[in-house]
View (cartoon, rainbow, N blue to C red):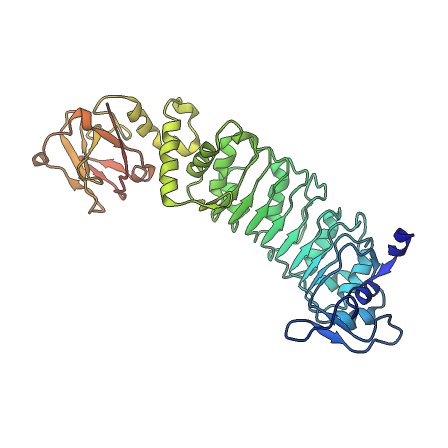
Length: 431
């Protein structure tokens, strides 16, 4: 009997019951909603209702709108409507509700059985004022999603979780206004499907892909630069990523600042600290990792750990992130003074001897220990080294900087070394 009584209920009936004076006492004061003091003719509503601007009508057995005039009377001021866990099967009924709520900004239709339902031409216009739309576990088709987004010109947030999507259908008309897309707990495995999201929603700032089966990021680097040009945050929790190359690909999203990636096969062999350090070192521009801010000190520790971790790796097996640092690694492995620290040059093939007593200063030396150039922490360009600067640092005190940023801009030119960075922050002694 109880299940029969909850079937076929209208939105108006549910509002009448939930917000009656007995169930929802009248309140005075700003922001409490509107008060309906007299019921429309024939309405089951009692003498007065106190309706808030945010209506939560989840799990109420709603199947249809009810009298549209009463919907308009009760809900003209409503800005957020939660209709999740109801029995709405027809987009036409939902359109009737929305066409009478002109100020609606947020709509939650999660867990309504909308599989296979579609809208008549022109009926989607009722959704045009929305900015946030939640369609989790509705099994709504991509065609229906595109029908809605074509009408909702200012849509900013879209939730499409738990819809069993194995693929993505491309729309002929993109939705440039969308900033946030939640598409978690689906069955997207191929990056070719994910890249379609970049074509449909070119303005995406945040992409939540957690709990999909994505196995790799198979995309050329130059294409990644254009695919998600505004993306600042991506969530890849519990995906199937198993290669560091996939993590390195994230560096080619030009504005990416926040990454969430836990529970992937790639990170299983490592301890928690190793995971953190290796990820931080692989993502030099990311400022928030797994919800925690990356400090300057943590990044320096991570980069040092990253280089030490790969000291024994053959050069052809080094991660792409380390390729510019191969010469430094080779120097660290060879326990003698005078190793080549940059591509061979006829005039500059020496080592680097920093000043232990004055961090940030040091000199480049040729194989014959003749000074070539000196770098001082108080100068943006190196000074030419003179014989008066003294002999090379004794072998036991010789050390090499680990900070990658100090080496990347360095080049040899004749007898001088020019560098735009003098941030020699830490050294490793040769023993």
